[in-house]
Structures are given as C-alpha cells and as structure tokens.
Image (cartoon, rainbow, N blue to C red; front, top):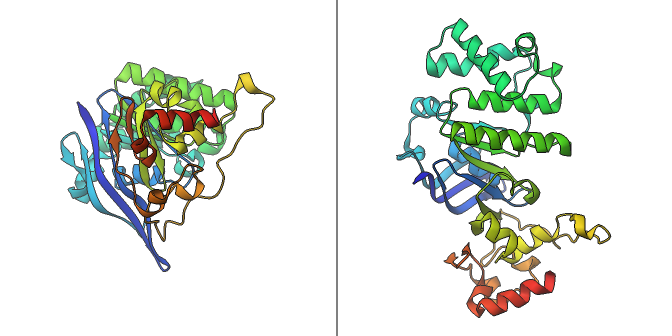
Length: 332
C-alpha cells in the first residue's frame, strides 16, 4: 500500500527572467515501510520535489499543479496549521547541510526537544528523557553531557546524526533524507547509511533517499527513481536499475561511478550540460547529450511506458528490446 503518492507534480520558480520549471510532471509512489531512492545530477529537481512534499518551497517557488497524497490526504490542499502539525510529526526531513539547518544559538536539548513539546505535549522532563534516548539511538557518545552543547561543538558526522535524531523524534511514518552524506568522508557516509538502514528496520518508517550518488543506494533502498531536468525518466527495483538499466541517462550515471574492478580506467562523464529550465525543450530533455538521439527525440517528449524491469521514458524502447540491449552494450 502506498504511503506517499505523487501525481503529476509541477513546481516552478517565477523569476524576473521567467518561469523555471524545476519539477515538471513528476509521478511516483513510496510504500509503507519501503525505502526508495530519488537519484540524478545536481539541479535535476530532487530537492525541490522533497521541499514540495514538505510544503517548504521557498519564494519565488510555488507548487502549481499535481497532487501529493500522504496517508490519504492531499498535502497541496492543507492549510498552514495542518501542514505544520504533520511536518516533523508524521512526516520528517533530514536536510543536506546540518550546519545551516541547526540553530547555532540553541543547545541540543532545546532543539531536539522542541518538536516533542509541540507535537507530543511532553513536559521538560519527559522531553529530556526522549532526547537522551534519541542521542543514544543515533550513536552520539556521552549523550547526557552533550545535551547542553551547541552545534559548533560537534563534528560534521555528529551534526548529521543530530539531524537524524531530530527527524526521528516523533517516530514519523516517513523520513525524507536529502543528501544525508553530503560533505562527509566515506567512512562517515557508510556509518550514516548503516544507521538509516538500522532505524528503518527498527521503526518500520518509509524512507525517500535523495542523492546524486548511485553508490550509496544499493545498501538501503528497494527501488530507484531516476530524475533528469525536472522529470522522471526511469523507475525500477535496485537490482533492475543497476543490472539492466533502460534509459541512456541511467547508463551514463552508472558508467561515471568508480569501480574497484576497473581501477586503471578513467571515469567516463556524461558529455554536455543539463538543459536550461527557463526554456524547457520541446522533446526529450536528454536528447542533446544522448548519442542515440533520433529526430523524434528532439521534437516530442516520450511517454512513460512499462517494461518487464519497471518504467522508462525513452524513444529507444519503440525499437524493441534488442535495440536497447545493443545500445547499452556499446557503453558497457
């Protein structure tokens, strides 16, 4: 059963230069207790999708169309007070920059306890006990001593753990993790992903993991949603997307990953630049960077079609599975 269902979501930023279509007709689902990865290059609309779900799109941005169904309610139609009741309570988000997300003038006990007092009605003693429990849960050592400390007294990895503790304070049904390993070294990255995996198992929360790094997806998620230029171009299970990707953009993402079995080979970047979202292309937005682009790719956006592996929006699919296989083998 779907806990979160996005239907044709459209979010734009209305600047003095014109309308920037940051999210342009995105649709996907996240089931109860499921972990789903939303992947793609920087600027493809992943974070704006998350902010749209949370009702936190900053001006001059605005959700201009579509539905965000969470636990049976359309979040786009909720009033401010109702949205604030959901946010941080049953729907939480881990921001990608813990240093700017934590208040530098409030100690950790105050910050983590705020949501508990607001949403759960806890008194100071109960909130303190819950905060201590959360700090132990996310692996903060000497938790009682740390309660009175401030964000600058924690390392980058510890601040990210604090953000996770804050997001989990009210035992949310869904956790949105927006680049939770940004600016952390690989050892701390692995610890954060293992922590999310353990918490998902223990709390049975759904997770929407937003990342541009395909390498951190396999250990946590069951399904992958690939975004490009504000659109979903491919979806499928982790196994299907990693082992048998169907879209040329996904091939490029996977090809650009470093591999231990090919240490002598240079990484192969995706050529070109993402399109200017002020002037969305008429056809497939990936066509200018795609070596297999056809005339129809430039003229018309392909529909999302269902395959044996998932869904994909690519005109190559019209040529049949063998044509797709031959094209993919050229970049293998």
